[in-house]
Length: 364
Image (cartoon, rainbow, N blue to C red; front, side, top):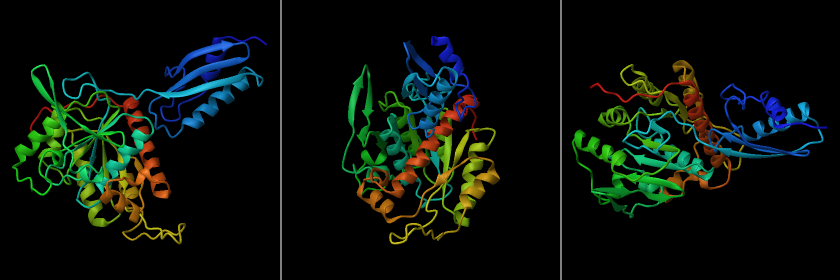
């Protein structure tokens, strides 16, 4: 039997991207299609290397071609990716495709732990990732990445000096903790902290990144306003625990991003310390701080629920030792990896369905 490239494209028009709700051909995700005899070869360019639906899309392509062209054909599909963006080539962070703010209403909910593990998980899946530790007064990222005693280099480009970010576990990092003695308190007024964050955005040689996570301090402060006034943020993640007091503060964090003057899309809510499973009873879940608080909040606020992270000793040990839990094998690593994939998925959906975020130009 004879068939052409056109026949293959026609078959692939029946395969839909489950997130974007359009077919792969109209989304321009099919590249390098060749037909040699009964052998078909092409690439599918996904919106993120961390796509959780990669195998489903691949299998749907094979099934569609077999159905419309014939069972006897052999099919070679390469699954690649090109992370989407709605950011312009702006002066600040020009090569960064997506800026993701990670916030919490209150301290102690594990926001920095979640940020570190999400970043490492995405880097392990082939994405280029960076983290700005924007908690100027209580930086955690140096400890969580086991580089407390490291200092970044300075690189001169033309007449300007740029800070070269440190790199650990495939993630580029910057923190005030790299620039001040570890035992010294940072006693600054708000404008000085805001100035430091601006420098982390404009005076650091980040280079091309798919995702830049900004690990914000708890609450709503000058730092948050400085961020949205300096760069257009792709989206925000709010981290909470199931406790009532944490949820009450998380609502405030959500509402800050939703204010008309700020208007940053909320990618969703992550619930940390959701439950505890004893090692000897891995299938048993103890909801020490309440159950489904984050899920209920997401439903009430009409934002996605991105997933839950169990309360496990390995997470605390990973943070203290500087080896994030997602690097180890086991249920907790799988939980972080699944949430990271959902975050990447939500970024792709946001980029396909919403307009570019604008910088906040007014004083709020």
